[in-house]
Image 1 (cartoon, rainbow, N blue to C red):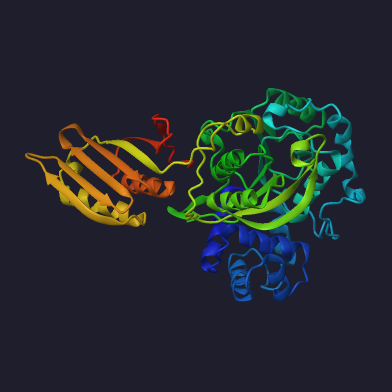
Image 2: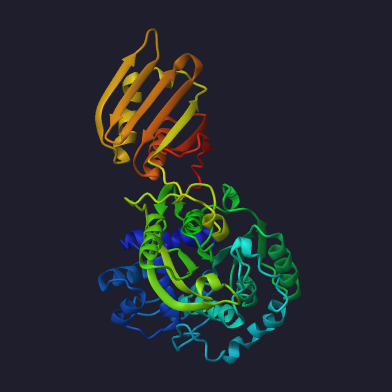
Length: 476
């Protein structure tokens, strides 16, 4: 979906007051395209969108010139969605629901069998990386599941690791706009590159990267769908969930106004755990801005993988706007693979707080002379992040300069100005949500408008390592 079409659907969602946003509009058009005779009640059941809101969206689609009448697409609408959203199936491509068993591959998808021979020559699993190959029926099932959900046609898809090589099956459909695979194993990437060439898959990109490192900005806020089968540990799961939330589209700017994007998809495969560990899994999902909309048990079957009983569940996740979790399950950089975590004598470190420091530099010194305005912006940055200010101490220096320290319910924040140097420093320590610290930084940057900024943070606690990490405001 190109930028102009995203803008159009974003405005349709806003005018119809559709909380599901652009993805909600797309899902309505997808169902109308596949099931042209559906009334609002049935359409509501299939999309999960309330009937009054659904009717409002349809009316806005008519006003936008996308569909002919509010109750059907018409020839004009069908051509519009086919051309701009790249919808292909004018029917349900898999009318029979399937859960964990693929009984028969429909004839029209028989071409997917072409990859079976290739998969027999996959590089052997690297067990130190928690790799184990999904069997061929699982590869087919996952591809067909995405087709049924409408998550391949016209979509930008990213795989966070793909030693199963499901990206080849998805690429073979020729329906995705773009497919990217990120993996730390060069053997996997080399095999993908060679196989994509043999299958004439033109839109598959590969990227060597360790997800424990900061992800490249080129893949941040870009994709519609993430697929991942992370390491079998909760530490690995949290890391992959964080990266998934970063690469999925989360915001869009239309006519100078920013809009959050919700409803982007994450297809997560993860093995069974004891009840207390399953609770941590679900809390981690919520903590990283996802909701579980479907769970298919025993969906994935593997060759080997005895540690997870040779199967795992499939979770269908969707993003929500601005998650506010009280669980604070942020990962700490460290062991994520089973062999590493098992070798640890202590549980994974969870921070008691986050310490942010930053520098803001200005070409014009005049903006730093208004101490009252700087104090107002400073306090508002804390309040807008839902931080409780207990007290504030400030000092006006002569001939110029200003300092303020806010005592927070969850620690403190400080700001200091040096107008003669065009410089402001900030210091924020919160025993609260990591995202609140990010909000403060973003607010200060937006309102103070510096020419240059640098921000760093560390996780504080009894076992924390005193090493500051750069803050990526574009991706976190």
